[in-house]
Every structure is written in structure tokens, then in C-alpha cells.
Length: 125
Image (cartoon, rainbow, N blue to C red; front, top):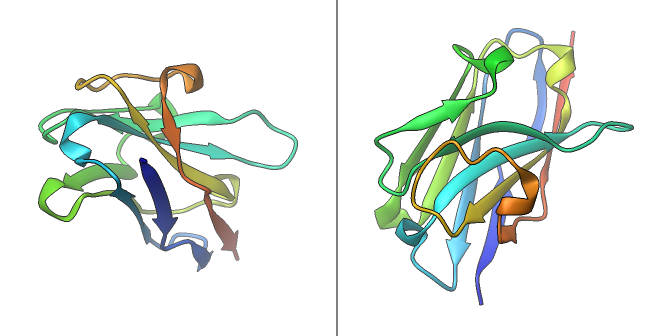
């Protein structure tokens, strides 16, 4: 059974950086394109970015380009989200997800087959 577990969330100051991790068990992460989403209170879950099966291509929400970077280490069955220059508007629960497609640019929630439980990111002044 595929399981995804996010970690690395916490409290960070405005302008700071944070790296989130997403570890897969139950299957080889190289079988999947991977995505990151976030959800703030009162808002719908929104696309952050995605990465293809081997990590050679990534796609990001326009508003996050240049600040967020997705990478993966298939040998560790792990995907990462590096977040820089964090703003209060970035505060949310961040989720990783696995799609049964090898490519990147999978932006819709409904196209992802597996989800983690989420990790909280809080941004303070």
C-alpha cells in the first residue's frame, strides 16, 4: 500500500527558508510524477508545483516561480520542496501527492492518486 509522509514544516520568519520532505513507502517513487499542494484556512487546495518521474523537469504555479524549488531523490524514495523568501501568504498546510503519470505539469487535485497527511507551515514577522 502506498503511503506518503510529509515532514519539515514549522514556524519560520518572513523572508526565511524551509525545506519540506515527502517520503513514500509501499512502492518505488520513481513510478510517479509528484506534486506539492497547499491549503490555507477557508481556501481551496491549490497547486504549488510538480516534478516528473526522474526529476529532470518541474513546473510551478506562476506566483511561486523563483522562490520554490522541487527536487527528488529516487534512491531515498523522497521528494523535496525548498521554499525561500517566505511570506505570510505562504502559511498553509502543505501536502505532497503522487500521480500515476510520469510527467510533470499535473496541476489538478483529482489527478493525484495518493496523498500525504500534510505538514503545517507558519510564517511570522
